[in-house]
Amino acid sequence: MQTVIIVIHLMIVIVLIGVVLLQRSEGGGLGIGGGSSFMSSRGTTNLLTRTTAILAAGFFATSLFLSWLAGYDRVPSSLINTTPASQQAPAPEKNLLDSLKKAAPAKPAAPQVPQAPQSQ
Image 1 (tube, rainbow, N blue to C red):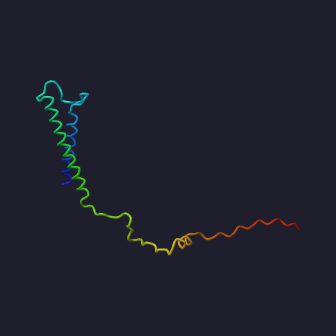
Image 2 (image 1 turned 120 degrees about the vertical axis):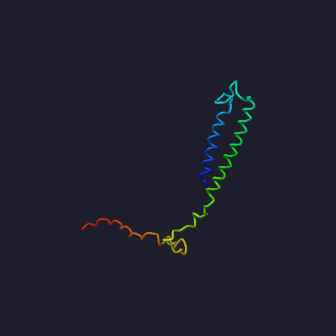
Image 3 (image 1 turned 90 degrees about the vertical axis):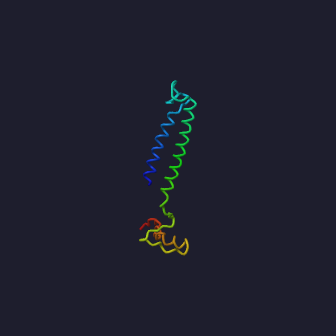
């Protein structure tokens, strides 16, 4: 189902790009506005404008449907409350000072004060 919608979506995108490129811009662009055509300039403009609007609506609808389809089977989960099954959470400490006392390294011995040399 998703593949069919993606193919339809891509076909709409390609046709929409082509229709937009065919429209006449102020600089002329790739527009059809040549002298002899089967439709008048106003008729061509109306046809291309309507076609662009229809293709844009189709693009919008297929985009919304694809985003809904992508999230359809998704199961909500929390990133905060997950702990691996193999690891257990550490036992809670009584307070912050107890945990800091355990984490603090042992006190090094006080440095010796240098003694003045004694004469004999």
